[in-house]
Length: 261
Image (cartoon, rainbow, N blue to C red; front, top):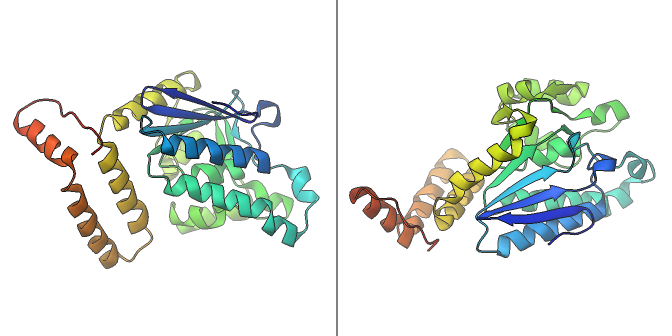
């Protein structure tokens, strides 16, 4: 199912969400964000989908940011109550989604594009892509989570440099910083993203869900609380059929048949 600004497709156990505004370099507006959220909800409810890949239409941009003309027309309270409320809600939905997410960053990921990828689990980036948070050059700063998620994912001094200068970085620099997993040739980007998605989808969907919750929730806790949380969650895992199937398969030297239960 597809909408005007979002294309969706299911290939095997992988759901693909494509932001489809190539003439606008896939810039995010309220309608696009709401369509993204609706597509995510459909994938979350579809038991056949184990992993979600997010990419942009065309070869130039993953997401080149927000609509600057729209920002210019806004005052603070209206922005807070309207666009900012939507983008924060939608990005958080992607961040806490129980299914693993993979970003296939096919081109520029600037402003909101970098803020979106910061919410996704695994990030493959085309070798020619550029990333950055250029809002400071417009007299703004990242307001869709970028100023907070970036400082939690890379060294603080490097995060501050990127935020204070608005500089763009290359795909190779993004990998070196730990913002992306690896850079690949653009023509192989979706092939590699799908191969990785299928490798992950081959695992137990139930255990992936519990693992992602343990990691995501634990990352926001102090270590002692996070360790206790992990202890509780692994107890739940040992109540799943898939955990016992995996152990049995190992002992019997065969491939496990996970059922997500």
